[in-house]
Image 1 (tube, rainbow, N blue to C red):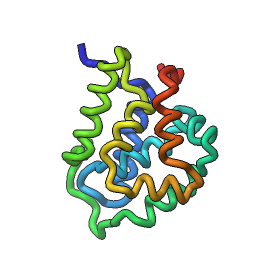
Image 2 (cartoon, helix red, strand yellow):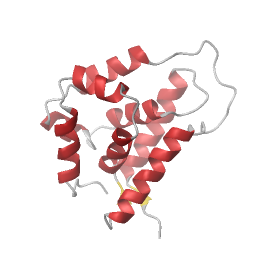
Image 3 (cartoon, one colour):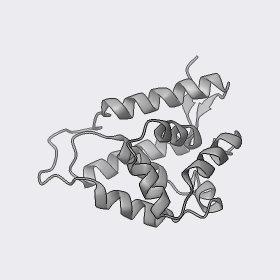
Image 4 (cartoon, one colour):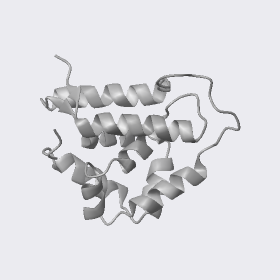
Length: 148
């Protein structure tokens, strides 16, 4: 049976939709997923704070690097995931199954995004005061993150 998303992971995907629409994008990319993870209060922010990462600065750095379209997308309803974002979500599902976890948490989604990133995440995390390798290890070492 395929694991379900935690409430926090589901909210992060909803927030990623909002982030993409705010930039007038016609799809949700990995950067939007990452922004959605940063936006969802109480889910992954504790881990970022424990690593002394300024999530507001990470967010500002990402937004400054991302393109903004002039026209609002014509797509109604949910925007589609880009192929790379879909791969990251699929990788998170596979990771949860391999760890025998019943749900895909924001922690697992973040690890999957970090594995398949284009360097923009790492750059933004470093500018936010984080050590990417230490964060990756903290996310890996913390199998219980309390998400329902």
